Length: 61
Image (tube, rainbow, N blue to C red):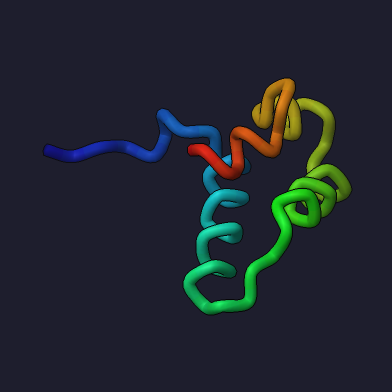
């Protein structure tokens, strides 16, 4: 069965990947640092994909 990544928010998925990659490589990045960087790089519409609690979206998804 095939799945499309189009159904997932691109920027949230990227943040999750960065968070997990840091854990796998034993160089963990704090979730708040990933969110802070995303906030500085994305416009308001793009950052809105993270929802009301970005930390939960990055750590749980």
